[in-house]
Amino acid sequence: MTLLGITVNTKGILNNNKTKEKSNSMARLHIDNLDTKILQMLVDNGRKPFLEIARECGVSGAAIHQRIAKLQATNILEGSRALIKPTTLGYDTCAFVGIFLKEPDKFNEVVEKLKEVPEVVECHFTTGEYDMLIKLYARDNEHLLHLIHEKLQPLGLLRTETLVSFREVFSRALPVNPTNKK
Image (cartoon, rainbow, N blue to C red; front, side, top):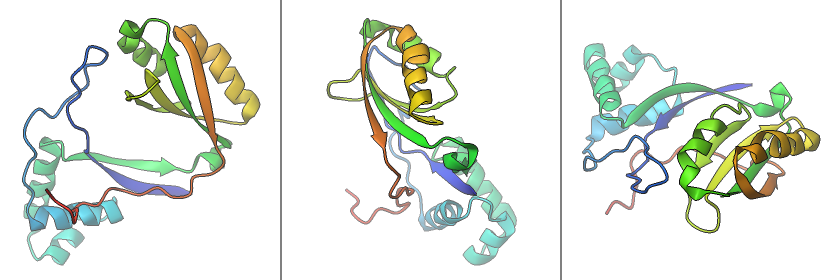
């Protein structure tokens, strides 16, 4: 089963010595009601044709094309992607792994090495005990053990703590027009 979605940028600035991510150093951009309506339609259906969006918004197809280009240029809209259900490809185990680094100043190097492990689908710089938190998928517990011992430990890890997800209960996009604006 393939689901399609839109990734809406919700990242802020990350200022630290461990990572240099692409940041949104500009102030939050104002989006009007038309932008909000366009974004919500794309979140609901990332494959919705621009002309259909235009009809529902009461504007021209060119106007929608320009608005979407603006939303992409300002990094509000990062793009679209196919979301594949991991179990359909044989990845039955989802795990969150808290990583403690031997040398925390090697954070960027470890991140680059983690990008080479295809089963690692997310990596977060977090507060708390861990230097980073990753999400990964494995075929089964044996494969998970292999990933941790053979792929992750050699990256310079002091130790890891692993949480296995029994199942994802829900996943959703953030609201495009939050009701509790500040």
